[in-house]
Each structure stands twice: as structure tokens, then as C-alpha cells.
Amino acid sequence: MDEFIGSKIPLGVNSNELKGFDLRINKLGSIDTDLILLDAVKYLLSDQTKSGQQYKQNWNIGWGENLEAYLESKQEIDLIPKYITKNRTFRIKGEFYSSPNPLFEVDLARLIILDTLSRYMNGSNTVVDIGSGSCHYTLWLAKKFGNKTFFALDWVNPSLQIAGHLARDFSVDIRPEKFDMFEPRFIDFRSKNKLALSIGALEQLGTDFEKILTWFKDLEFETIVNIEPIVEFYDENILYDFIAKEYVIKRNWLNGYFAKIKQLSEIGEVEILEKRRVFGSKFHETYNILVWKYTK
Image 1 (spheres, helix red, strand yellow):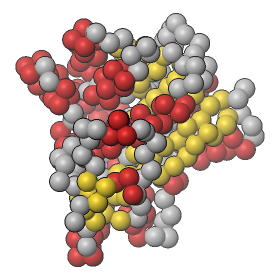
Image 2 (tube, rainbow, N blue to C red; image 1 turned 90 degrees about the vertical axis):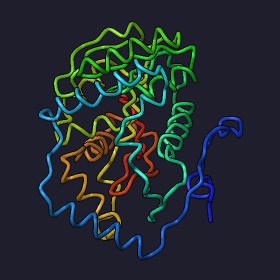
Image 3 (cartoon, one colour; image 1 turned 45 degrees about the horizontal axis):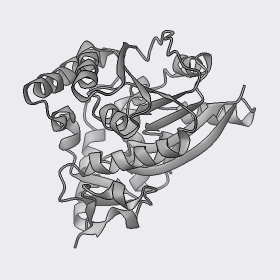
């Protein structure tokens, strides 16, 4: 029987915002759960390409496919990455679910991102989307917050081309900027009141995150909102969490980032405003929330 996701994850948005979103879920039984965990173990024992700087060409190809599809159709749906639409199994509150909605992940993620930004935007008039990729979240947010300027930062040209087309096609204030998270450069955002946002982007840094932390500080962001896989949120004494943690490590995704921010908070250099597990796909949780800021 279908269940509404709101019973599992509180959604701090009004009822009008929920219209048009299909948030039905179905809890998977013990047999399906065992098969998922077995599949995860097999993956962990296999040889896989790790993320990092060497993965740049893959992103160039991937966002190039989205660019080509969008230019042909001019439909927002063609901005959604293919790896997202393939996800049909989801991790929520220690259990596995499926959904009859093929865009369930996008629908739920959009509402969670909207809820988070609505609470932390404060006086920020500029949002800097780091690793904007196919820009499907950037566009959706730019339309929701029509009075804000959105900078779309990415390291490959197809992403920047997408951002440029969207700005013109939808008359929204999206400004593309070439940016490499591994070697962050100064960008004049022409605003002191700005928020940094990353959605499944910083994960590519693995353990190489010190430069981006310095960049956040040097550019004096009011608030940093990271929606990322955070390995420190998992309890490795629970199989469900252990699998997710080892998966993130196997992929060479973000590791040690939260531990560093927590260390900085203990000496008063940063303030952690929110940390929360939310949901993810089959093997791990992409959409965990970490909101923080520098205090000095």
C-alpha cells in the first residue's frame, strides 16, 4: 500500500508547495532488503572507478548529453541526470522503499532543498550553486526565488552552456562561472550577502576539501548549505549504515569534511546551524543536510 513520505520526513513547506509532487512510497519487505544488502556487498567487493579530478571527462560527457537533449526539446525534464532517473530504491530512516513515481528522488529533493533554503536564506540576495551540473536544481530554485541572483559554478563547459541557455529561455538571473572545486579561484560575486549551496557536488572532493573550506572563509559567505553524503552521520555498528559508509569510501566521496567542521566549531571558528540525515538512494544517502557558517 502506498504511503505518503511526509509521515517519515517532515516537510517544512506549505500545502500549496506540495501540489504537483508525487511523494508516494512503499516499504520493501525483508526479502527485498536482504537482496539490496547482498547487492551492496557484491559492489563493495568489485573493482570500481573512484571519483576525483580524473573523473572530469565523465562529467563533460554526462552534462553534454543533458545539454544536447535540452536544446532539442527545451523541456526541463531533459535536464535531470540519467543516473537519478535510474534510482528506484530509496533509503529512509533505516529502511528501504520504492516509489511508483520515476521522479520521486527529484521531487523529494526539491522540497527538502526549498525548505532548507527558505529557513537559511535570511538576507542573502545571492546564491552560489557549487557544482551546478545540469542546473536542474539551479533553475527550479531560481524560479522559486525570483528576486535572487544565482551563480552556477562548474568545471566543464556543457554545464556553463546549460546555465546560459536557461537564463535566456526562462528569464531568470542565472550566471555561469567556470570553477574547479579542487583549485578554487576568487570570484567577485558583487554581493556581501551571499549563501553557498552544494547538492551532491562536494562529494567529488573525497578528502581533498581543505581548499574549499578556505575559499568559503575568504569569500565571506553568510551561510554554507551542504546537501551531501556525510560519512560521519553513519553508525558503523549497524549493517544498514556500515554498507552506506563503506560505499562512500569505495567511491572516494567526501570523507572527513564534517569532522573538520566539527573540530572548527569546538574552537569557536565556525557555528553549525543544522545537521540532519534525510534520505538517499539504494546504497547511500546523498541528501544529508549540513548548514554552517564562519564566526570569525
